[in-house]
Amino acid sequence: MQIFITGGTGLVGSRLVPHFKQRGDMVLVLSRRANVVAGMDCEMIQGDPTQSGDWQNRAAECDAIVNLAGENIVGKRWNDEVRRTLRESRVKATENCVQALSRQPRRSDGSPKVLVNASAIGYYGPHGDEELDENSPPGNDFLAGICMDWERATVPAKDAGVRVVLARIGVVLANDGGPLAKMLLPFKLGLGGRQGSGKQWFSWVHRDDVVGLIALALDNPVVSGPVNVTAPNPVTNKDFAKTLGRALGRPAFMPTPGFMLKLVMGDGAEIVLTGQRVLPKRAQECGYSFRFPELDGALAEILGS
Ligand SMILES: NC(=O)c1ccc[n+]([C@@H]2O[C@H](COP(=O)([O-])OP(=O)(O)OC[C@H]3O[C@@H](n4cnc5c(N)ncnc54)[C@H](OP(=O)(O)O)[C@@H]3O)[C@@H](O)[C@H]2O)c1
Image 1 (cartoon, rainbow, N blue to C red):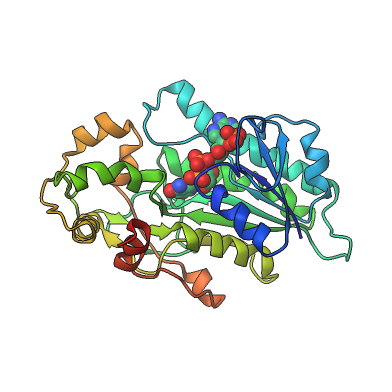
Image 2 (image 1 turned 180 degrees about the horizontal axis):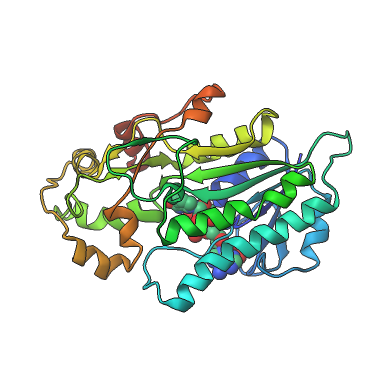
């Protein structure tokens, strides 16, 4: 399969590309810094997914697009300009991918092309202890609004006959980026613990299962619409801290008050301080077998213990 990936240089994409290459797919990665990104074993295409351009001709020729582009949410104050960038980097990139695919929505054998579009569990907004699946309604905060616009931007592709999968991704665990990488130092120093009240839910997913679920979405013709990309056993923030402390062999009794977290993570701290309890109902209905269903197994693999 010819797979065009936007945001392929990021935390998820950097694992997705070798996975597809290894199984024999042809992979093209669009990047705003194609000439400076080293070590990607694929065809790099210079371009900005938020701007229309020649890259869309290459994308239109491919069998599938995996659209992972998006300005990083964590570590900044969400002033008006940042809010605009967070939204536009997702919605405009999606509109441009959709435009490209809609030109040639069918593969050479007549089957529909596929768009796997990133979204996030922020779609559901904060929901206390309630269990959420793909049928749960959207939230009404800033992040939920972005997710709704992001997902809505895919509708013209669906209307053109493309199979569209909305990957509502949870908190991706990896040791070289994302929130876990940020937490490791304080936890290693014995300064880790619950964040805020600790009662909020943390719907995590090991990066390998993000790759596995995106591959499932591409390969399985019955998959379409929203798919929660989260492990089947979400935990509370307090239990996450306990499990991480245990995995590192360090005490984890030092709570981080919400205001401190906001100093370190900016407005992105909201994601950690509220959270939601999301279940991967659709993935399980499709028979996906999680490599890392339990948090301690995921952390053991990531931390190499
Ligand atoms: N990681 C998570 O925990 C998580 C959770 C929920 C949802 N998601 C979503 O899943 C997708 C992939 O996540 P990730 O963690 O791999 O993302 P990431 O590491 O932050 O990388 C995303 C890529 O998007 C491109 N990008 C960044 N800012 C951009 C901008 N302003 N305009 C256009 N392109 C921009 C960059 O590619 P170039 O610099 O090469 O152009 C970057 O490598 C993202 O859309 C993210 O929002 C991630």
